[in-house]
Amino acid sequence: MTANYHTHTPRCRHASGTEREYAENARKGGLRILGFSDHTPYDYSPSAYKSGIRMEVEELGDYVSTLEGLRREYEGQLDIRIGLEVEYYPKLFRRLLDTAKAHGVEYMILGQHFVGNEEGEPYSGQPTDDEGILDRYVKQSIEGLQTGAITYVAHPDLMRYVGDGRIYDRHMRELCRAARDLSIPLEINLLGVRDHRHYPNEAFWRIAGEEGNTAILGADAHTPQDLMNAESEARALDMIRRYGLELTDAPRFRRITTMTQTAEKEET
Ligand SMILES: [Zn+2]
Ligand SMILES: [Zn+2]
Image (cartoon, rainbow, N blue to C red; front, side, top):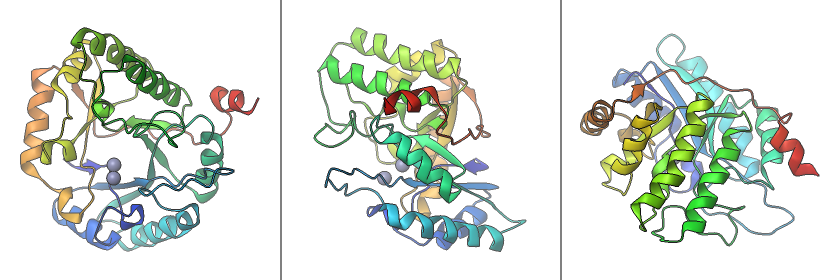
């Protein structure tokens, strides 16, 4: 692995280590590119709802300037990129794009941890046999990709559908096809591998292989040590071989702009 675009900071309240420690470990481990993509802030107003897993909107400025400082410091040794891991929330996304753009965020990866607009909705990784939730997860993720702002999909297989495998196949195949048609890579999440989570899901990656998707490895680092883990990397590469997936380490940064059809549609 020479590039990782999925790195958190303590601002999300469930990661540890300073930005410099992440950069130092990345450099020592031989990474050339280190992309930070901490859990995006979201402005839920007029709702008073607060998320416990992301930075506040007010912290975004410091996040970006800290990383810009580190980027200058590491020039010539490590290419630091500044991104966010975002959910696509239809009611809130346009405002997020404006905020991210104003702060100079360079890229967004989609990690659809909740459906709807998060508030009062189930966590996508919670086991469910409800086809409706699976369907919403897939439709909403696809809509997110269609905004044109998304560089890649983080753990697309986070959704934990425990019902009929044929139903899972039908819906997830839709997501794989949409990502393929938009040339958006799907992430094999190394945190899932390291922690023996329900993802990466073999059934999902079999579909992705059949549909000709491109995969990317993402450390999803929540501690600096997470950045280099040869064992999880080897297991992910084995999946890539078994399912005949394309592998990329150079995902395309998209334009973070509000001038997307979906965003326009939301306003009306
Ligand atoms: Zn996290
Ligand atoms: Zn993450």
